[in-house]
Amino acid sequence: MFDVAYARGHYTSLSDGWTYLNAHVHAQIPERVSSAVSTAFRTSALLDARIPTSGSHSRSQENRSSLGVSHVAAARVAVADLVGSVPERVVLGANKQILLNCLAEALQPRLRRTTQMVLNRVDPESTNEPFLRRDASVVWAEPDLGTGELPAWQYEEVVNGSTRLVMVPAAHALTGTVTKISEISDIVRAKSRAWLVVDASAVAAYRPISIDDWGADVVVVDFAKMGGPQFAALVFRDTSMFPLLKSLNSAAPADSAAKLEIGELSPGLAGGVSAIVDHFAGLVESGGTRSTRLQRSMVEVDRYSRQLTRHLLNSLLGLPKVHVLGITGEAAGKDALYLDRVPRISFMVNGVPAATVQKRLLTNGLVTELSPRDPLLEAMGAFEEGGAITVGLAPYNTMNDIDQLTRVLASLA
Image (cartoon, rainbow, N blue to C red; front, side, top):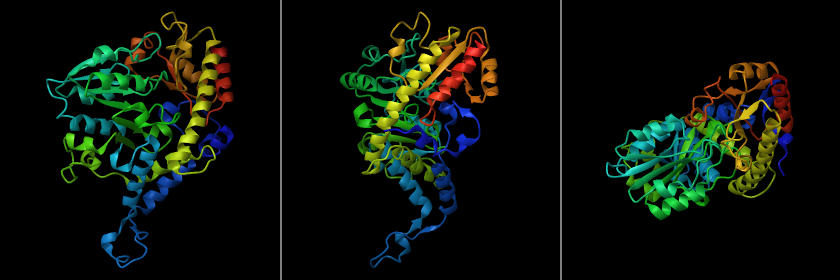
C-alpha cells in the first residue's frame, strides 16, 4: 500500500517551507538521485576493477573499462525495467528534444514523398517540428477541444496503407487527459505498417508502462519529469527495427541502438537514471526483481494518483469562478469529469489574470506555473483572457496540499 509520508521522506527539498505543485516542469529530486549523480560524476573516470574478479584474465586491461561505462550500461538496464523491455533496445540521449531530432533523422528512409505520417495537435510544436522536416505528407489528428482528449476513433480515418509513422502522447502534459494508446495501436496495426511512437513522459511518474501492452513501436521517456536527471530514452519494440533506420553514428553496428546516439553521453547524469527507477520501485515495500517491484509499486502509485486527481478536480469544481480547462464549460459535456486523467490540470479564474493568481498563490507558499504556450490550450482559448495556471502533482503531494490550494483560490475568487 502506498504511504505518502514514506514517499515524502525521500525528498529533503520538501522541508524548505514551500508547497510544490509544479511537478510537470520541476519535479522534486529524491535524495537518492542527487547522491547517485554526485557519486557517478566523482567515479566516472575510475577504472572498473569489479569484473572480472577471477580467472586467467582477471588482471587484463582488455577486460576492464571505466566506471562511467558501467553507469551508462546500468542506465540502459533501468530504462528497460521501466518500460518492460531489454537494454539492447534502449537509445539514450541528453534530453527528449535531441532524441526526437535523432529519431526523425533516422526515419528518413521510411518517410519518403509517397508516404504519410500522422501527427497531432496535442503535442507541443517542439515535438512535431523535427518530423515536419521530412518528405512524407502530414495528416493531423485533432483533439476534442471540450475535454482535451485525443479521440482514438479518428485514427480509423487518418491512418491508411501509406502511413509510416503515428505520433501520440500518453497524456497531455498540461490537462492530464490520458490517451487510449491500446485502441490507437489496434487501429494502426489493422490499417497500416506504420510505427507508433508514444511519448510516455507525462505518465511515467504515475503509472506502470509496458511497451507490449500499449502495442507501441517506440516509447519516449524524459527522466527529468520524474524527478530524475536531465536524461531521456527511446525504447524500441525490437532490435530488428534498427537496420531499417538511417545510421547517425558511423562507428556503431547497423543493428544496434548506438547507431542513433550522437556524441558522448554523460556518465554522471546516467548514474541518476538507475537511481530514479530504483526510487519508484521502492515506494512500496515488496520483494523480487526490480522490474517486479517497480510494477507493484507503480500500481499503488497509480491508485494514489487517481485519488489526488479526483480530490483536485472535486475541490476546484466547488469554486464557481474557477474554470478548469477540459472539465468545465458547455463544450466539455457532462462526461468530461470522468475521463481518465493523471494529476495535472490547467485552470483560469474568471476576471483575474493568471499572473495575479500565481503571485497570490506564491505569497501563500504555493508554487505553481503559468501555463506555457501550447497548441491545445491556445485552441481552448486559455490565452485570450489573461492566461492560465497549470498544477502538476506528484506522488509526494498530499490531500492537504490540494486543500491549501483550494482555500487560497477561494479567497481570490
